[in-house]
Amino acid sequence: MITLTYQFKLKLTRQQIEKVEHTLEICRRVYNLALSERKHWLNSRKSPANACSIISEYIIPVDAPYPNYIHQAKSLTAAKQSNEDLRSVNAQVLQQTLKTLDKAFSDMKAKGNGFPRFKKTMRSFVFPQLLNNCLAEGKVKLPQLGWVKIRQSREYPTGFEAKQARIVKKARGYYLMLYFQSSEQCPEPIVGKTSLGIDAGIESFVATSQGELIKAPRLLLKAQSKLKLLQRRLKHKVKGSKSWLKLQNKIARLHESVANTRRDWHFKLAHYLGDLAENIFVEDINFVSWSRGIVRQRSLESGIGQFINEILPYVAWKRHKLYLKVDKNGTSQECPSCHQATGKKKLSERSHNCQFCGHRENRDTASAKVIEYRGKIAVGQPVIQNACEDVLTGIKQRTLFDLVKCL
Image: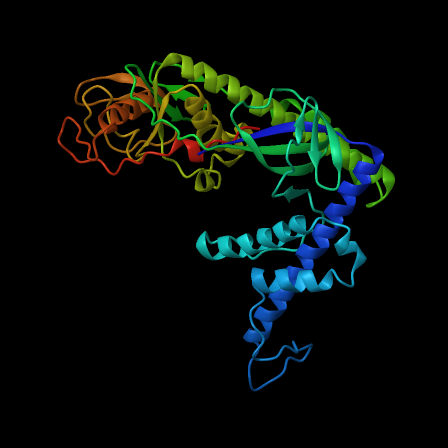
């Protein structure tokens, strides 16, 4: 099964904007109320049994069940009988809001995320089911909103069925995220003849095994002067006033423009790298911890994690290229010529000098060649050995079709 996500700009009427804003507000209230119910239940179980709090105490029966999704969904159905605002919003949209909260609690336990917080504003909501024949040229039919005009920047995919729709509010307007599905099975990627190793660098954005050092454009740095001017003006405005909100929107639009330009450059770079080889090998890096280190500013500004984990796999899948992640450990400590371990290097050392074979090269391109070497051996083999018969650590291959995120 293949899933694709297409993004279109919405062209809403005034009445449709009011309905969307009303739905966002009701979803926010439902989310916060459901979170408050869960939070009160958890706090009531934490209080000591033989004493009461000096400030306040939670009066919840001992036999009261935990308010999980099923319990809160039933409470929502009962509350709709007496609340007109809840009846005015699509029932499945509100259920998806409760599912979002339930997923936040699941991720808190499974992934170690923080405790869910109350939402000041709601930025999106989901229609989990769409009507039949809901797609037309330049418009989409949505529940309760009817036919909505869109800026159709691309054609709908053939052989796919529209399953879900998400309306997202951004600084530049409202956007529609359409989720398409196809029941066809995805063919496995075929190993090609040519290969390319890609190393995520510090001084350069990426380095290739062909000796290229590609630097990322400093988009945020170019917009920094205008951003500083707007933020300086914002400091003198009364918080919450119309002029304050207008300046906030200008700042958000500027950040969105930088993000869109960066994403466009990522796609162009991914297609360029796809032209160079049929097999693409990258390091298996945890970019969350990467962004917490000394390269935090550069990595966040360039969006290297988005490029390696989302855009490059999607472009490789779309163009029938093999995308493989190899072990990141020791790529800068191995000689790309003789594959001997040369020892650790400081970040200030930007060149590779092998004391065994005398090979000299830029540090990043040398690491890219080691990545290509590991990727070539890893294709079809569970265990790798280098020239010195030292076993390298595990090789991990990603399923390309789970990483498809097309916007």
